[in-house]
Length: 274
Image (cartoon, rainbow, N blue to C red):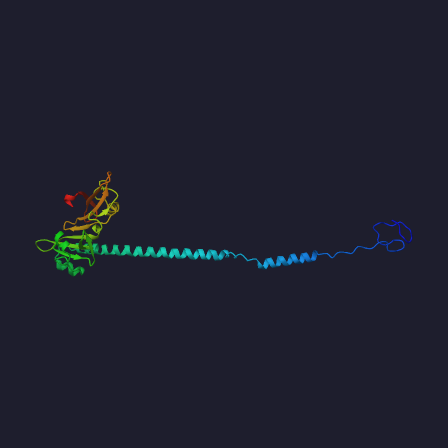
């Protein structure tokens, strides 16, 4: 390409002659760049979108979750403890009610061979010559009785929960003291349910009373203290036979005055001898 003024060769990309400075061709107009505007517009959209977007709920901090979980566990533990306390109180109350009658019988037995007035003056117990319950008067042979304040029902007949019976000699002194726990047959006239026939053949004579009773592991229906010094525990229970039948039984266990095992007898109960 040639400069129109100085006639020297110039580049086709030159807008002015590099030798004489004359303008060779018009510079093209620059178009305004929209990059910033787009960027600004894009930023504005991003900004608007950011503020318009609904924020998701923030998760609770780990400590708060642990506190909430710990609080629930504490409440559950308190409820369980409350239920257990109620069960224990009821069990203790029932146990104390029964043991009260047993203790009365033990105290009275210390005065076997004495008159009724001696027992009442030494123990602060007051015996009656007749029960307040017709079922007792009809079914039990006794001379004097001390009864629980509470009653229980056996086959629709009211009995005291427990009673202490005295038998007297012709000379009017105590020969036998018997504690009877009627609540044992409250649910079932046969007594308590047991897993099997209670067999004491494995115990030698003079075995310790505690060991024998731990093996039996049910509450006695009655405890009889005799003038001879021997104590007879009577148990009423029933168990399931191999053929599925339920067999009722009465177990009598005899200990001497030193608490040593002497012997036992088992009577199987059938409808004709209930």
